[in-house]
Length: 323
Image (tube, rainbow, N blue to C red; front, side, top):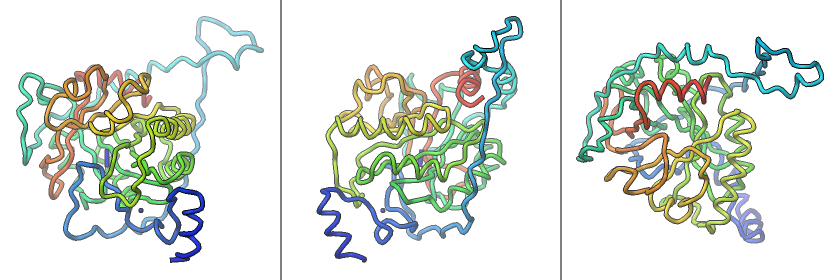
């Protein structure tokens, strides 16, 4: 899942003690922010000219239980039952078998991700133009697509990838690369502005890690990190009605997240050992087990991920989180 007006801007920046981006520095050009697993190609990918799309409104219609008639004055307080149709809809999802290769395969032993049923990928503009049907045929049952980072960067391939992933039949979700030199509220608003709220989408993801190549050199305290993450995730959950998933890497987790956010789902990067060894005691939904995957439909390497559960668990999870 996957940054010059110069003199006055710099004086203002020093005055507030923070390094927030401006339109001159971090405008809507290509972002330098990448996840720890992404390898950039030699030549940049052309920026998409697709104009922004309006975010569709969705209103959930609550139906009272069929066997109990709620008093009129209490109707608004009755929680809607999740339609059983959600489970029925996902019961027939076809799950493609994993056929990916790996440029740097790791022997995970009995804990190999190959023993799990539902595999997927995460991508960004660095993967260029993707043949989604071929990628689906290789065993990509889901994809997380980089959407935004900071408060003013949009991945130029996001809208194209978002549409084409759905057409190919992959379950799709979007992720945001968190930038430590912008306020959490600004970043949440930027993600919401650019990522449609659509039925069936996977829960949004906040990607939190230390990026050693970032223009932003700030490393907030653990307390500040957790506060900023909470603000961001609360705004996304209120808008999309889905609890965000936290993607992270071992060093950032050790510094900030050990023991935190026990009620949030996690997506863990662990490319040399099983997550139980790298993140002891932490439950997880997705495991990013390789940053060197190879697949038909994509030039170069791609991140490989797996869902924590069998096919039935996958269908049940989709019904609960996307139905």
